[in-house]
Image (cartoon, rainbow, N blue to C red; front, side, top):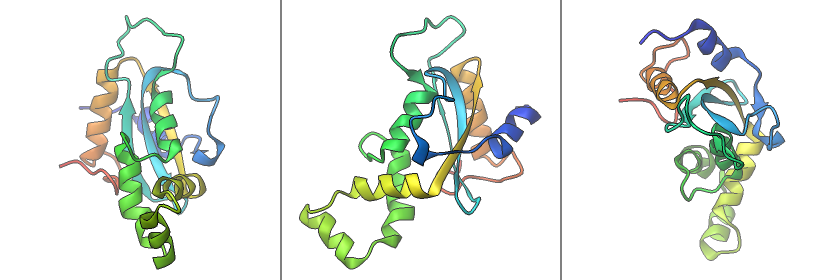
Length: 160
């Protein structure tokens, strides 16, 4: 697949938005798109897409659909139903927790999702691009996972 140079440039060098500033009015509430997530030390850690079922003929709904809802889910820090948040918990948050933090989670005094949300909001940012259809977003996501751009594969979800 030939990836648009501008699309890839936008995912690497476009405006970076901090999850700490969510909700973000710059993210359209409807549309298929691809996004990259970056650690504050400029590590490329994740690529994702949303809007797989969106086509040129999809009728806009009154409720958000597509890239907005996916980024909203990531910003929440809730692991249930969000594989990105699970990866963040396992690979980035868990190594930072003290024994007291772990005890607080296992005893129910503290929620692991709260640690995940705080980590995401304090350390991660994202860039996004809209594409005409979900199938295009899926293809771009997979090409990036395979390392078909200069930033290599993402830390948390590299392709096979």
